[in-house]
Amino acid sequence: MRGSTLAQAVAIAVSGALLVSCGGAARDRAASPRNRKPGPIRVGLSLDTLKEERWQYDRDAFSAHARELGADVIIRSANGDDSLQTEQAEGLLNQQDVDVLVIIPHNAETSASIVRAARQRNIPVVSYDRMVLDSEPDLYISFDNIKVGELEAGYLLSRAPKGNYMLIGGPPTDNNAQLLRQGQMKALKPSLDTGAVKIVADLWARDWQPQDALEKTETALSRNPGIAAIVASNDVVAGAVVQALDEQKLAGKVLVSGQDADLAALQRIVAGTQTMTVYKPINNLARRAAEAAVALARGEKVETTGTVNNGKIEVPSILLEPIAVDRNNMVEAVINDGYQTIQDVYRYVPLDQWPRIPR
Ligand code: GAL
Image 1 (cartoon, rainbow, N blue to C red):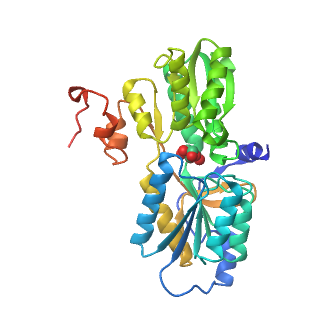
Image 2: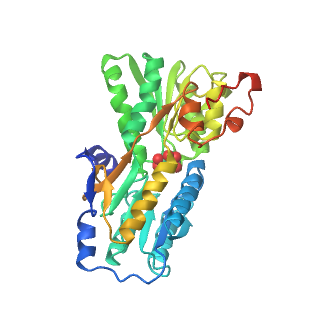
Image 3: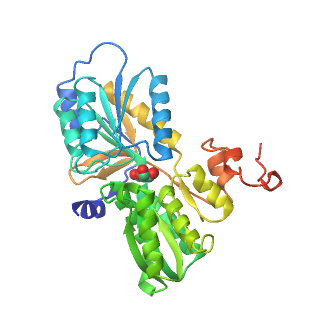
C-alpha cells in the first residue's frame, strides 16, 4: 500500500508561522493571474460524505464563515464514491466556475486527479482535514492527526499499562487513518518493546463503516479472550466496538478510545462504556479554512504553521491541536466550547447527577 510508506514519510517541518503565498501553485498563479468573474468569491466545497456527524458540522460551520466573508458556497457530497467525487469536483471547476476548491477527499490517492484538474484551470485548492497525496494542493488544513493517535493509545496505556490490545482504524485510503495508526504505534512502542503490551488484532474498518467494525470486532473478541483495551480510531468505530463488547457482557470492563466527540460517544463516556474521545474544535478548523480559501481566491497570502510532505511537495499547512476528553474535562473542553449541550450529553442521567456548569 503506497499510502502507508507515504504516511510514514509524512514529516512535519515546523518553522513557526509562515506567511506564504502557498508554494509553486501560487507562484504560477501570480505569474498568470486568473481573470475572475466579477461578483462574490465562489467557493466549491467537495465533501467525501455527510455520513458521520462531524462532517455535517464542518459543512455548516464552513459555509457560515465563508458567507460571513461575502463568498458564495457551492456544496457537493459524494457519499463515499470516488468517481462521483471526481465528477462533482469537475462540475464545480467547470460549470460552476468556482474561484477556489475546498476538498475533503474520500481516497487520498485517486483525488490527486482533482487537484491536477484545478491546477490546469489555475484554481487554488485547499485539502481540508484529509491530505490529497501525490499532487500540489495550495494548502492543507487539519488537526495534528498523528497527535490524535498518540492521545488515543496514550490515554488507554495510562489506564492499562499491561495486557492484550486490539487496534481498529478506518480505511487505509483515508490518509488520516494512516496518520492515526502512526500516532497510536508511537505511543504503544515502548510498551510493545518491553512486552508489557501485545497487539492481538490490528484491524481496519472499511469506509469507517460501523457494521464492518462490528463484525471484525466480534471475530477478534471470539479469537482473543482477555482483551484489556481497544484503540478505536473514531467514535463511530468505538460505538461498534462497545456494541460487540456488550454482546460479551464486557462493555465498561474493556477500555475503548475514540475521536470526534460525537454525541453518542459522549453519552457512552458518561455511562462508562467508552473511556475517552479526542475532541477537535471543528468550528476553529472551519473558520480558518474559510478565511484561507477566500484569501487564496483573492490571490492573497495565507498564514500557515509549517509544511507537510504529501509524497510530491511540501504542502503549506495549518495544523491545529486536538484535545483528549474523558468524563472529567468534557464540560470544559466540549460543552463550554458549544459543540454539544449538557442536556443532550446527560440525557440519560438523573438531573441531580449532572456536573455543575461553571458560569
Ligand atoms: C477522518 C476524520 C475523522 C473521522 C473520519 C471519518 O478522516 O479525521 O474525524 O471522523 O474521517 O469520517
